[in-house]
Length: 188
Image (cartoon, rainbow, N blue to C red; front, side):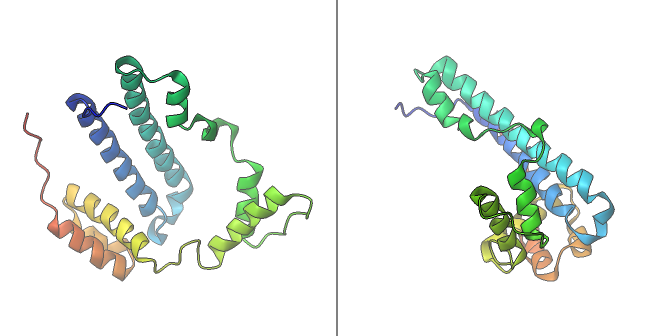
């Protein structure tokens, strides 16, 4: 495999797209907070799909570059893009999604002759019983604080962190926002 750096215009595009994804992810977290409960269904779905679509754009730009400027076969490119994992949102929630929600919300266990459904149900129960990762997980707290702190700094609205985050997350997000400089355009 060749070891050449990513072309600068492509690198800039990928950085821009990833920044958009981060902002959308922060919005997903924002709309899970109680003070915006009236919009959570619509906005979490919109922002989560915006983030997904934007990452797809980044993936396709990189794939197009690889296809046009490398000797990567379509089979190899498909494996890098993990196309076997891809699933259309247009198909809607699968049975496994419904079983996971049932497990989260205390719904009945599927029959024993449905091992995949039982596995999904059990996964949902794991979230309900303190989460797949416990609420106090430091990495999760740090990730959320970074997203909220970055958004607060970019919007020059650090004070807004107090209104909707739990105190520990707000404190850490404020620290993140305080150490970030106002972004400057990249020198060309």
